[in-house]
Picture (spheres, rainbow, N blue to C red):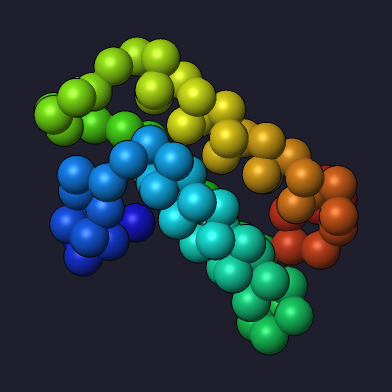
Length: 83
């Protein structure tokens, strides 16, 4: 995620961040599958311990959502499917 997105999400609720992440991942997965026809690589994501209000539980919940999305995208086939 680039710095502009991080700035835009700064101070947002955990729910707002989760909705943004879900929308962002889904749109990139769809584009990679149907338009680009290229693999989708997700890297360097998470929550910074430097953010105000950071806590490990929120980080773990966020990471679980990301991995759940990756799993569901792989199950659906296409750019994240197992060869």
